[in-house]
Length: 158
Image 1: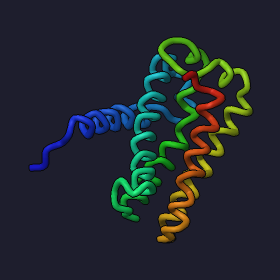
Image 2: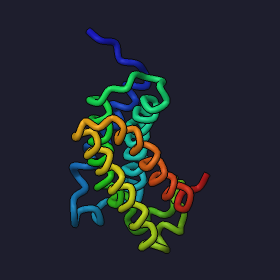
Image 3: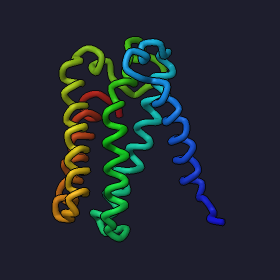
Image 4: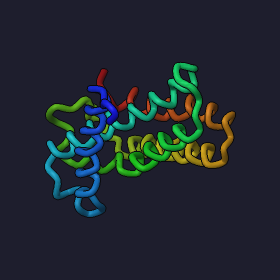
């Protein structure tokens, strides 16, 4: 039997919790969620996304061997999470235990554009991985990170 590290257990718990929320939050259902549930959803989502981005960065930096299958798995997970990102930002979830700045709820067009850019970059990462193009995969990681930073720098408190 394989031992699971504490970090792996936490990530697994986050995935399970996040997947439960993902299943319960569909189009038209998101508004039925409470603001606190939305905040919990996006925190879990960001934690899972961070896990996968770090995996890709570690491969890019040579901190772990480059593995196209692992890259594809990480990119695919990010791409799946990217399409649900906006669902965690429902009206009223701008207050409470959140690092999301009010600007995300005021300039919704810019916020949506930042999310759309992230979704586009995750899709490009998946496409590069499916093509088996290691050079393109490696080149896509900084672009993906820039799309994360583009949202975090403007819409998240430090």
